[in-house]
Length: 276
Image (cartoon, rainbow, N blue to C red; front, side, top):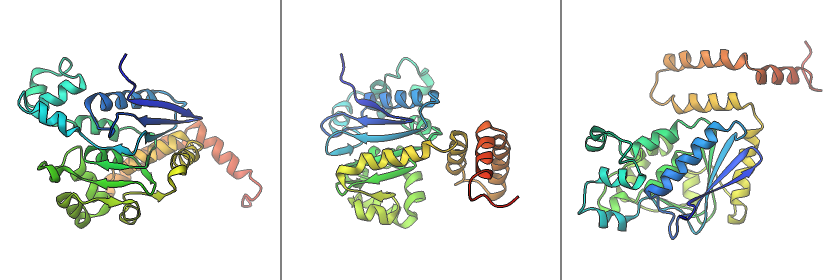
């Protein structure tokens, strides 16, 4: 029986997904496929209101396995290698396999479309595709051991998994350029300064802090939280008018929900409620 690459642990309404792909938690096809399956299960489970991604070992996620890339290079192109490692060869059409315009981006879109809050608890290196996976989370808690690096240019490769889109939106265009072309290492304190990380906490408290924050989010109206995440995720490339036209129907829908009615009722009857 193959080893479990993603361990699932429930903390009430919070699901912790713990990466476990020794020695460096490489973002291999099997690991990514299992992670996506876990997210799909979480998406369909209304009892799960937030997800925390942590990792076993000193590395949070080191991106692709360079040795596998080296070994696979003579046998086929990169798209074919990806499809085989993800077990997609039989599920994609010939055209999709031969003229693949997305590659791993197909799975990036799946993660980006996950509406429930995603919190990363990063206590080691997040490199290459692992850095991209970290940025796909809504918030990143880090310990003093966290290190971020784009990594790709160090081995002669260009950006993938959405890093060219995600990074400038997090740190701004100049810092994104610096991090992308130099592939330099960013430690925890600088990561907080740049906005890559939300908060630094001691290593011993990392997962507890991330899960605790996620549990606070889980106490909010799930519909309101998920709509808010969806709106924020899709605001970057829209005009103000387009975003306003997107906001209002969702506000109408959330106002009609039982959760909103109960929350408004509770607000009006609290001890310090304003006079009506």
